[in-house]
Image (tube, rainbow, N blue to C red; front, side, top):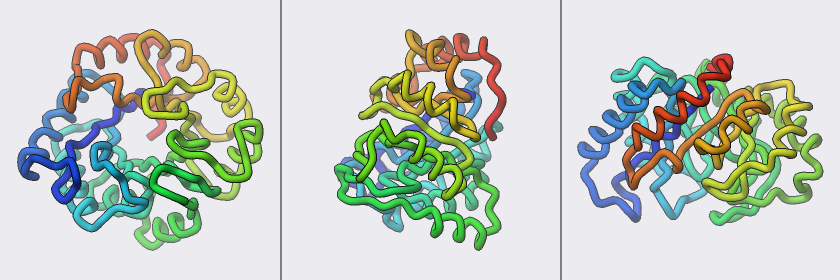
Length: 256
């Protein structure tokens, strides 16, 4: 499954914001339509440009993302997901329920990490109880050894313990493997090792491009592609189409 990140422009109230919300909304809808026309399998809506991030979303972020996701859902037929940065899975579930999104990405679901935003602890219990409260069937895709973060007490040699904790104790529906930073390739050996032990789908979450997608497609159930497909804020449709053409040869099953 090929999922493309729709990186929202900086939202009102954020440091880099320069546009009115109406313009951001229109731009986001048009970008989603372009992705559907390019035949991607799903879109994940992400406040990627709200830098510098806080640990949790502010009220205005949740409000604006809910409206954008709802309007995108009305204008495209492919599944959408939500990722609220830096790490706010409860906000993501709320937005997903309000908009009809099918999945969320949680950068830190379990364990504790040192990040540029400070110390962040996973809280699967709080997330799952909140999902139950909302009667939500939204799927949870969890990063492992997430980019821009260092897990305390473990390293990638402990992949088995960390991955099984995420699956067996935190009930993730899928595992996402990334490089160290945005756009950085995944360690192929780590991906293979995780795929061999995982009982849920494994997704490559960074560093995918036209030159390496076939290599990673062989050892994963899906890919998430973001910055490689952008020119500034805009999606490069030609680049998306080329990537889709390569990936579709593998006929991966839908994850959502």
